[in-house]
Image (cartoon, rainbow, N blue to C red; front, side, top):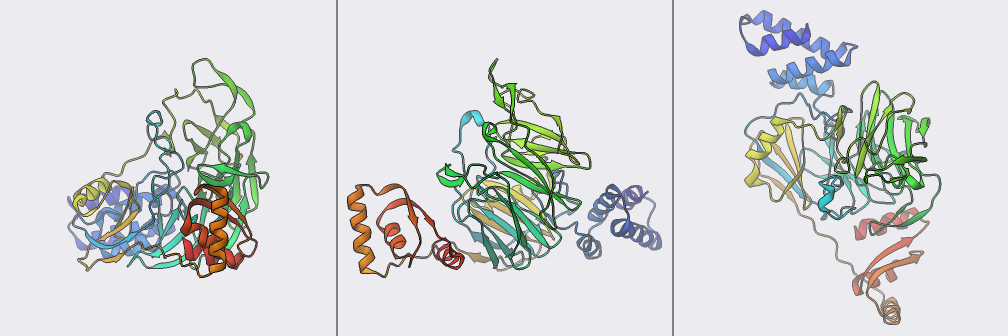
Amino acid sequence: MVLALGVGLIGGAGVAEAQLIDDVFADLTDALLYHEDREVREAAAHALGQIGGEEAYAVLGEAGFLDWPMWRYDKTRSANTPLVLDEELHLQWVRELPEPERAWPHQWDDRGKLDFDISYAPVVKGDQIFVPSNVTDSVTAYSIEDGAEQWRFYADGPVRVAPAAWEDKVYFVSDDSHLYCVDAQNGELVWKFQGGPSNHHLLGNERIISFWGARGGPVVVDGTVYFTAGFWPLHGVFIYALDAETGDVEWLNDRTSSDYVPLPHGGAYGYGGLAPQGYIAADEEQLVIAGGRSAAGYFERDTGDVIRLNPRDEHKGGGGYDVHIDGMGMRRNEMLQDRVAALEDEIGGEVFYKLAAHGKLFVTTEDGALYCFGPDEADPVRHEFSPGEIMPESPEWAEKAQELLDELGESEGYALILGAGSGDLLRELLVRSSLHITVVESDSSTVRALRDELA
Protein backbone atom coordinates (compact mmCIF):
# COMPACT_ATOMS: atom_id res chain seq x y z
CA MET A 1 0.00 0.00 0.00
CA VAL A 2 2.80 2.41 0.86
CA LEU A 3 4.57 1.85 -2.46
CA ALA A 4 1.33 2.20 -4.42
CA LEU A 5 0.49 5.48 -2.70
CA GLY A 6 3.98 6.82 -3.39
CA VAL A 7 3.85 5.95 -7.09
CA GLY A 8 0.39 7.46 -7.40
CA LEU A 9 1.56 10.70 -5.85
CA ILE A 10 4.64 10.90 -8.03
CA GLY A 11 2.61 10.33 -11.19
CA GLY A 12 0.27 13.10 -10.20
CA ALA A 13 -2.70 11.63 -12.06
CA GLY A 14 -5.94 12.14 -10.18
CA VAL A 15 -4.34 13.29 -6.90
CA ALA A 16 -4.64 17.03 -7.19
CA GLU A 17 -6.45 17.56 -3.91
CA ALA A 18 -4.12 19.00 -1.30
CA GLN A 19 -5.70 16.97 1.48
CA LEU A 20 -5.03 13.71 -0.36
CA ILE A 21 -1.41 14.73 -0.93
CA ASP A 22 -1.04 15.53 2.76
CA ASP A 23 -2.58 12.18 3.70
CA VAL A 24 -0.25 10.27 1.37
CA PHE A 25 2.78 12.15 2.70
CA ALA A 26 1.70 11.37 6.25
CA ASP A 27 1.25 7.68 5.42
CA LEU A 28 4.69 7.49 3.82
CA THR A 29 6.29 9.28 6.76
CA ASP A 30 4.61 6.98 9.25
CA ALA A 31 5.72 3.88 7.33
CA LEU A 32 9.27 5.20 7.00
CA LEU A 33 9.71 5.96 10.67
CA TYR A 34 7.72 3.25 12.41
CA HIS A 35 7.02 0.21 10.23
CA GLU A 36 8.73 -2.99 11.41
CA ASP A 37 9.35 -4.35 7.91
CA ARG A 38 12.61 -3.03 6.41
CA GLU A 39 11.32 -3.48 2.84
CA VAL A 40 8.27 -1.32 3.58
CA ARG A 41 10.50 1.37 5.08
CA GLU A 42 12.75 1.29 2.03
CA ALA A 43 9.76 1.56 -0.32
CA ALA A 44 8.48 4.56 1.62
CA ALA A 45 11.96 6.13 1.55
CA HIS A 46 12.21 5.82 -2.22
CA ALA A 47 8.72 7.26 -2.68
CA LEU A 48 9.61 10.25 -0.51
CA GLY A 49 12.91 10.62 -2.37
CA GLN A 50 11.03 10.92 -5.64
CA ILE A 51 8.71 13.52 -4.11
CA GLY A 52 11.73 15.54 -2.94
CA GLY A 53 11.64 18.86 -1.18
CA GLU A 54 12.85 20.01 2.23
CA GLU A 55 10.09 18.32 4.20
CA ALA A 56 10.62 14.95 2.53
CA TYR A 57 14.38 15.12 2.98
CA ALA A 58 14.00 16.14 6.60
CA VAL A 59 12.05 12.93 7.26
CA LEU A 60 14.54 10.85 5.26
CA GLY A 61 17.38 12.36 7.24
CA GLU A 62 15.67 11.60 10.54
CA ALA A 63 15.32 7.97 9.48
CA GLY A 64 18.95 7.74 8.32
CA PHE A 65 18.15 7.25 4.65
CA LEU A 66 20.17 10.27 3.51
CA ASP A 67 23.39 8.70 4.78
CA TRP A 68 25.72 6.53 2.69
CA PRO A 69 27.11 4.55 5.63
CA MET A 70 28.68 1.58 3.83
CA TRP A 71 30.38 0.81 0.54
CA ARG A 72 27.77 1.04 -2.24
CA TYR A 73 25.25 2.50 0.24
CA ASP A 74 23.91 -0.45 2.25
CA LYS A 75 24.47 -4.01 3.45
CA THR A 76 23.39 -5.51 0.12
CA ARG A 77 25.80 -3.15 -1.74
CA SER A 78 22.89 -1.98 -3.90
CA ALA A 79 23.90 1.69 -4.45
CA ASN A 80 20.14 2.25 -4.30
CA THR A 81 19.84 5.44 -2.27
CA PRO A 82 16.42 7.15 -2.23
CA LEU A 83 18.16 10.52 -2.53
CA VAL A 84 17.69 12.23 -5.89
CA LEU A 85 20.32 14.92 -6.35
CA ASP A 86 19.55 18.22 -8.06
CA GLU A 87 20.44 18.15 -11.73
CA GLU A 88 22.56 21.29 -11.37
CA LEU A 89 25.33 20.93 -8.80
CA HIS A 90 28.14 23.28 -7.78
CA LEU A 91 31.54 22.63 -6.25
CA GLN A 92 31.43 23.20 -2.48
CA TRP A 93 34.92 22.05 -1.51
CA VAL A 94 37.78 19.87 -2.64
CA ARG A 95 40.47 18.20 -0.57
CA GLU A 96 43.76 16.94 -1.95
CA LEU A 97 44.87 13.74 -0.24
CA PRO A 98 48.18 11.85 -0.49
CA GLU A 99 48.56 9.95 -3.75
CA PRO A 100 47.15 6.45 -3.08
CA GLU A 101 49.45 3.42 -2.89
CA ARG A 102 47.49 0.37 -4.00
CA ALA A 103 48.45 -3.08 -2.78
CA TRP A 104 48.70 -4.86 -6.12
CA PRO A 105 50.15 -3.37 -9.32
CA HIS A 106 47.81 -3.46 -12.28
CA GLN A 107 47.90 -6.77 -14.19
CA TRP A 108 46.00 -7.24 -17.42
CA ASP A 109 44.69 -10.68 -16.45
CA ASP A 110 43.23 -9.25 -13.22
CA ARG A 111 40.60 -7.34 -15.22
CA GLY A 112 40.04 -5.03 -12.27
CA LYS A 113 39.62 -7.83 -9.74
CA LEU A 114 42.09 -6.28 -7.28
CA ASP A 115 41.22 -2.62 -7.79
CA PHE A 116 39.69 -2.24 -4.33
CA ASP A 117 42.28 0.30 -3.14
CA ILE A 118 43.22 2.24 -6.27
CA SER A 119 42.04 5.28 -4.33
CA TYR A 120 39.87 6.39 -1.43
CA ALA A 121 36.42 4.88 -0.74
CA PRO A 122 34.68 7.01 1.91
CA VAL A 123 31.31 6.67 3.62
CA VAL A 124 28.97 9.33 5.03
CA LYS A 125 26.87 9.38 8.16
CA GLY A 126 25.25 12.52 9.49
CA ASP A 127 27.43 15.55 8.90
CA GLN A 128 30.69 13.57 8.62
CA ILE A 129 32.52 11.80 5.82
CA PHE A 130 34.94 9.04 6.89
CA VAL A 131 37.91 8.46 4.59
CA PRO A 132 40.23 5.41 4.80
CA SER A 133 43.87 5.67 3.73
CA ASN A 134 46.32 3.08 2.44
CA VAL A 135 49.05 5.74 2.67
CA THR A 136 48.77 7.06 6.23
CA ASP A 137 47.23 3.83 7.65
CA SER A 138 44.29 5.77 9.01
CA VAL A 139 40.64 6.73 8.90
CA THR A 140 39.92 10.47 9.00
CA ALA A 141 36.63 12.25 9.64
CA TYR A 142 35.89 15.46 7.73
CA SER A 143 32.92 17.80 7.82
CA ILE A 144 30.63 17.36 4.81
CA GLU A 145 29.93 21.10 4.89
CA ASP A 146 33.42 22.45 4.26
CA GLY A 147 35.83 19.49 4.25
CA ALA A 148 37.50 20.51 7.51
CA GLU A 149 39.32 17.71 9.34
CA GLN A 150 37.68 16.68 12.62
CA TRP A 151 39.76 13.73 13.78
CA ARG A 152 42.11 11.00 12.59
CA PHE A 153 42.68 7.49 13.93
CA TYR A 154 45.80 5.52 13.01
CA ALA A 155 45.89 1.75 12.63
CA ASP A 156 49.12 -0.27 12.44
CA GLY A 157 48.81 -1.05 8.75
CA PRO A 158 47.19 0.24 5.56
CA VAL A 159 43.40 0.66 5.57
CA ARG A 160 42.53 -0.52 2.07
CA VAL A 161 38.73 -0.85 1.95
CA ALA A 162 35.81 1.35 2.93
CA PRO A 163 34.70 1.56 6.57
CA ALA A 164 31.15 1.03 7.78
CA ALA A 165 29.31 3.56 9.96
CA TRP A 166 26.58 2.28 12.26
CA GLU A 167 24.77 4.19 14.98
CA ASP A 168 27.50 6.26 16.70
CA LYS A 169 30.47 4.13 15.64
CA VAL A 170 32.77 3.54 12.68
CA TYR A 171 34.22 0.12 11.83
CA PHE A 172 37.20 -0.57 9.59
CA VAL A 173 39.81 -3.24 8.88
CA SER A 174 43.54 -2.96 8.33
CA ASP A 175 46.44 -4.95 6.98
CA ASP A 176 47.49 -5.26 10.63
CA SER A 177 44.75 -7.97 10.88
CA HIS A 178 42.46 -5.96 13.17
CA LEU A 179 38.89 -4.78 12.97
CA TYR A 180 38.65 -1.41 14.70
CA CYS A 181 35.60 0.19 16.28
CA VAL A 182 35.93 3.91 16.99
CA ASP A 183 33.59 6.62 18.22
CA ALA A 184 32.21 8.54 15.23
CA GLN A 185 32.24 11.90 17.01
CA ASN A 186 35.78 11.98 18.36
CA GLY A 187 37.66 9.04 16.81
CA GLU A 188 38.45 7.47 20.18
CA LEU A 189 38.99 3.70 20.15
CA VAL A 190 36.00 1.75 21.52
CA TRP A 191 37.45 -1.70 20.90
CA LYS A 192 39.57 -3.61 18.41
CA PHE A 193 39.70 -7.28 17.49
CA GLN A 194 42.59 -9.25 15.99
CA GLY A 195 41.42 -11.53 13.19
CA GLY A 196 44.60 -13.57 12.76
CA PRO A 197 45.80 -16.20 15.24
CA SER A 198 49.11 -14.51 16.11
CA ASN A 199 51.17 -11.33 15.75
CA HIS A 200 53.29 -12.77 12.94
CA HIS A 201 54.21 -10.00 10.46
CA LEU A 202 55.97 -10.01 7.12
CA LEU A 203 56.90 -7.78 4.21
CA GLY A 204 53.84 -7.70 1.94
CA ASN A 205 52.89 -5.30 -0.86
CA GLU A 206 55.94 -3.20 0.08
CA ARG A 207 54.68 -2.71 3.64
CA ILE A 208 55.07 -4.49 6.97
CA ILE A 209 51.72 -6.22 7.40
CA SER A 210 50.17 -9.07 9.33
CA PHE A 211 50.45 -12.60 7.98
CA TRP A 212 46.65 -12.44 8.06
CA GLY A 213 45.91 -8.93 6.81
CA ALA A 214 42.25 -7.94 6.98
CA ARG A 215 40.90 -6.96 3.57
CA GLY A 216 37.34 -8.25 3.83
CA GLY A 217 35.43 -4.96 4.02
CA PRO A 218 33.14 -4.84 7.06
CA VAL A 219 29.35 -4.87 6.84
CA VAL A 220 26.97 -4.29 9.76
CA VAL A 221 23.57 -5.99 9.97
CA ASP A 222 21.19 -5.88 12.96
CA GLY A 223 23.94 -5.20 15.49
CA THR A 224 26.44 -7.70 14.08
CA VAL A 225 29.57 -6.74 12.16
CA TYR A 226 31.13 -9.19 9.69
CA PHE A 227 34.71 -9.12 8.36
CA THR A 228 37.50 -11.41 7.21
CA ALA A 229 41.22 -11.73 7.95
CA GLY A 230 43.78 -13.59 5.86
CA PHE A 231 43.84 -13.85 2.07
CA TRP A 232 46.25 -16.75 1.46
CA PRO A 233 44.09 -19.89 1.84
CA LEU A 234 47.07 -22.13 2.52
CA HIS A 235 47.86 -20.14 5.69
CA GLY A 236 44.30 -19.79 6.94
CA VAL A 237 41.32 -17.53 6.28
CA PHE A 238 39.10 -16.34 9.13
CA ILE A 239 35.52 -15.15 8.70
CA TYR A 240 34.01 -13.48 11.77
CA ALA A 241 30.67 -12.31 13.09
CA LEU A 242 31.16 -9.97 16.06
CA ASP A 243 28.77 -8.14 18.33
CA ALA A 244 28.97 -4.59 17.00
CA GLU A 245 28.65 -3.08 20.48
CA THR A 246 31.18 -5.19 22.37
CA GLY A 247 33.38 -6.94 19.80
CA ASP A 248 32.48 -10.34 21.25
CA VAL A 249 32.63 -13.26 18.81
CA GLU A 250 29.24 -14.56 17.69
CA TRP A 251 30.71 -17.11 15.30
CA LEU A 252 33.93 -17.92 13.46
CA ASN A 253 34.44 -19.87 10.26
CA ASP A 254 38.10 -20.86 9.89
CA ARG A 255 37.41 -23.98 7.82
CA THR A 256 37.31 -22.68 4.25
CA SER A 257 40.95 -23.17 3.27
CA SER A 258 41.89 -26.68 4.37
CA ASP A 259 40.23 -28.76 1.63
CA TYR A 260 41.99 -30.34 -1.32
CA VAL A 261 39.98 -28.84 -4.14
CA PRO A 262 39.98 -28.34 -7.92
CA LEU A 263 41.61 -25.01 -8.74
CA PRO A 264 40.69 -22.69 -11.63
CA HIS A 265 43.76 -23.63 -13.66
CA GLY A 266 42.48 -26.33 -15.97
CA GLY A 267 42.83 -29.59 -14.05
CA ALA A 268 45.02 -28.40 -11.18
CA TYR A 269 44.26 -29.44 -7.58
CA GLY A 270 45.55 -28.09 -4.29
CA TYR A 271 44.71 -26.82 -0.82
CA GLY A 272 42.67 -23.74 -1.40
CA GLY A 273 39.42 -21.94 -0.90
CA LEU A 274 38.18 -18.43 -0.29
CA ALA A 275 40.85 -15.71 -0.66
CA PRO A 276 38.93 -12.62 0.51
CA GLN A 277 40.02 -9.23 -0.78
CA GLY A 278 37.21 -6.77 -1.28
CA TYR A 279 33.74 -6.43 0.16
CA ILE A 280 31.03 -8.44 1.90
CA ALA A 281 27.35 -8.17 0.97
CA ALA A 282 24.60 -9.33 3.31
CA ASP A 283 20.86 -9.80 3.61
CA GLU A 284 18.74 -11.60 6.16
CA GLU A 285 19.87 -15.05 5.02
CA GLN A 286 23.37 -14.98 3.58
CA LEU A 287 26.76 -13.32 3.19
CA VAL A 288 28.47 -12.95 -0.18
CA ILE A 289 32.24 -12.54 0.34
CA ALA A 290 34.42 -11.25 -2.48
CA GLY A 291 37.34 -13.50 -3.37
CA GLY A 292 39.65 -11.04 -5.11
CA ARG A 293 41.23 -12.95 -7.99
CA SER A 294 39.06 -15.98 -7.22
CA ALA A 295 35.33 -16.64 -7.02
CA ALA A 296 33.12 -15.25 -4.27
CA GLY A 297 31.90 -17.44 -1.40
CA TYR A 298 28.34 -17.71 -0.08
CA PHE A 299 27.70 -18.31 3.62
CA GLU A 300 24.82 -18.59 6.07
CA ARG A 301 24.62 -15.26 7.86
CA ASP A 302 23.47 -16.69 11.19
CA THR A 303 26.05 -19.50 11.46
CA GLY A 304 28.85 -18.89 8.97
CA ASP A 305 28.27 -22.29 7.37
CA VAL A 306 29.13 -22.59 3.69
CA ILE A 307 26.29 -22.36 1.20
CA ARG A 308 28.50 -22.46 -1.89
CA LEU A 309 32.26 -22.23 -2.19
CA ASN A 310 34.09 -23.62 -5.17
CA PRO A 311 37.08 -21.91 -6.78
CA ARG A 312 35.90 -23.28 -10.10
CA ASP A 313 32.37 -21.92 -9.80
CA GLU A 314 33.54 -19.07 -11.97
CA HIS A 315 36.32 -19.68 -14.48
CA LYS A 316 39.77 -18.20 -14.03
CA GLY A 317 38.61 -14.95 -15.59
CA GLY A 318 36.00 -14.58 -12.85
CA GLY A 319 36.29 -13.17 -9.38
CA GLY A 320 36.60 -9.58 -8.22
CA TYR A 321 36.52 -7.30 -5.20
CA ASP A 322 33.04 -5.98 -5.93
CA VAL A 323 29.99 -8.00 -4.91
CA HIS A 324 26.31 -7.45 -4.27
CA ILE A 325 23.83 -9.72 -2.56
CA ASP A 326 23.06 -11.60 -5.78
CA GLY A 327 26.66 -12.24 -6.76
CA MET A 328 29.62 -10.62 -8.48
CA GLY A 329 29.87 -7.15 -9.95
CA MET A 330 28.97 -3.59 -9.03
CA ARG A 331 25.39 -2.35 -9.04
CA ARG A 332 24.96 0.90 -10.97
CA ASN A 333 23.11 3.99 -9.86
CA GLU A 334 22.09 5.79 -13.03
CA MET A 335 21.32 9.06 -11.24
CA LEU A 336 24.87 9.13 -9.83
CA GLN A 337 26.34 8.25 -13.22
CA ASP A 338 24.47 11.14 -14.86
CA ARG A 339 25.43 13.70 -12.20
CA VAL A 340 29.13 12.78 -12.38
CA ALA A 341 29.11 12.84 -16.18
CA ALA A 342 27.63 16.36 -16.13
CA LEU A 343 30.52 17.52 -13.92
CA GLU A 344 33.28 15.88 -15.91
CA ASP A 345 34.97 19.21 -16.75
CA GLU A 346 35.16 20.19 -13.06
CA ILE A 347 36.65 16.90 -11.85
CA GLY A 348 40.37 16.61 -12.42
CA GLY A 349 41.40 13.01 -13.05
CA GLU A 350 39.78 9.62 -13.42
CA VAL A 351 36.83 9.03 -11.08
CA PHE A 352 37.33 6.11 -8.69
CA TYR A 353 34.32 6.28 -6.37
CA LYS A 354 31.13 8.32 -6.04
CA LEU A 355 28.33 8.57 -3.53
CA ALA A 356 25.33 10.75 -2.68
CA ALA A 357 24.38 11.84 0.83
CA HIS A 358 22.45 14.72 2.40
CA GLY A 359 21.85 16.48 -0.91
CA LYS A 360 25.52 16.37 -1.88
CA LEU A 361 27.62 14.44 -4.39
CA PHE A 362 31.03 13.17 -3.26
CA VAL A 363 33.64 11.97 -5.75
CA THR A 364 37.16 10.59 -5.33
CA THR A 365 39.68 10.39 -8.13
CA GLU A 366 42.45 7.91 -8.78
CA ASP A 367 45.13 10.49 -7.98
CA GLY A 368 43.66 11.12 -4.52
CA ALA A 369 41.31 14.13 -4.70
CA LEU A 370 38.00 14.27 -2.79
CA TYR A 371 35.31 16.55 -4.26
CA CYS A 372 32.02 17.70 -2.75
CA PHE A 373 29.26 19.17 -4.94
CA GLY A 374 25.99 20.65 -3.68
CA PRO A 375 22.86 22.37 -4.97
CA ASP A 376 23.88 25.91 -3.95
CA GLU A 377 26.40 28.15 -5.65
CA ALA A 378 29.43 28.63 -3.42
CA ASP A 379 32.95 29.97 -3.24
CA PRO A 380 34.66 26.57 -3.07
CA VAL A 381 36.92 25.76 -0.14
CA ARG A 382 40.17 24.19 -1.33
CA HIS A 383 42.28 22.07 1.00
CA GLU A 384 45.66 21.56 -0.65
CA PHE A 385 47.83 18.64 0.36
CA SER A 386 51.13 19.99 1.62
CA PRO A 387 53.20 17.39 3.50
CA GLY A 388 55.23 18.92 6.27
CA GLU A 389 58.87 19.50 5.56
CA ILE A 390 61.13 17.24 7.59
CA MET A 391 63.36 19.43 9.71
CA PRO A 392 66.28 17.55 11.31
CA GLU A 393 67.76 19.47 14.22
CA SER A 394 70.64 17.34 15.48
CA PRO A 395 74.15 17.62 13.94
CA GLU A 396 75.13 14.59 16.03
CA TRP A 397 72.47 12.37 14.45
CA ALA A 398 73.13 13.84 11.02
CA GLU A 399 76.70 12.55 11.23
CA LYS A 400 75.65 9.14 12.55
CA ALA A 401 72.95 8.73 9.89
CA GLN A 402 75.40 9.52 7.11
CA GLU A 403 77.92 7.07 8.57
CA LEU A 404 75.27 4.34 8.56
CA LEU A 405 74.34 5.04 4.96
CA ASP A 406 77.98 5.15 3.87
CA GLU A 407 78.67 1.83 5.56
CA LEU A 408 75.55 0.33 4.04
CA GLY A 409 76.41 1.56 0.57
CA GLU A 410 72.73 1.79 -0.34
CA SER A 411 70.12 4.52 -0.16
CA GLU A 412 67.10 2.43 -1.17
CA GLY A 413 65.40 -0.63 0.31
CA TYR A 414 63.97 -1.34 3.77
CA ALA A 415 65.16 -0.43 7.25
CA LEU A 416 63.97 -1.31 10.74
CA ILE A 417 64.54 1.02 13.72
CA LEU A 418 63.97 -0.44 17.17
CA GLY A 419 62.85 2.47 19.31
CA ALA A 420 62.11 5.96 18.00
CA GLY A 421 64.06 7.81 20.66
CA SER A 422 64.02 11.53 19.88
CA GLY A 423 63.11 10.79 16.26
CA ASP A 424 66.24 12.54 15.02
CA LEU A 425 67.82 9.43 13.48
CA LEU A 426 64.58 8.72 11.65
CA ARG A 427 64.38 12.27 10.31
CA GLU A 428 68.00 12.23 9.13
CA LEU A 429 67.57 8.92 7.31
CA LEU A 430 64.39 10.16 5.64
CA VAL A 431 66.02 13.29 4.24
CA ARG A 432 69.26 11.51 3.24
CA SER A 433 67.86 8.38 1.60
CA SER A 434 64.90 6.73 -0.12
CA LEU A 435 64.68 3.96 2.45
CA HIS A 436 61.29 2.57 3.42
CA ILE A 437 61.62 2.73 7.21
CA THR A 438 59.61 0.88 9.85
CA VAL A 439 59.93 2.05 13.46
CA VAL A 440 59.03 -0.20 16.40
CA GLU A 441 58.05 1.97 19.36
CA SER A 442 56.04 1.07 22.48
CA ASP A 443 55.13 4.60 23.59
CA SER A 444 51.82 5.49 21.92
CA SER A 445 52.22 9.25 22.36
CA THR A 446 55.59 9.17 20.58
CA VAL A 447 54.10 7.11 17.77
CA ARG A 448 51.18 9.52 17.38
CA ALA A 449 53.43 12.58 17.35
CA LEU A 450 55.71 11.11 14.67
CA ARG A 451 52.75 10.02 12.54
CA ASP A 452 51.19 13.47 12.69
CA GLU A 453 54.52 15.06 11.83
CA LEU A 454 55.49 12.77 8.97
CA ALA A 455 52.15 11.62 7.50
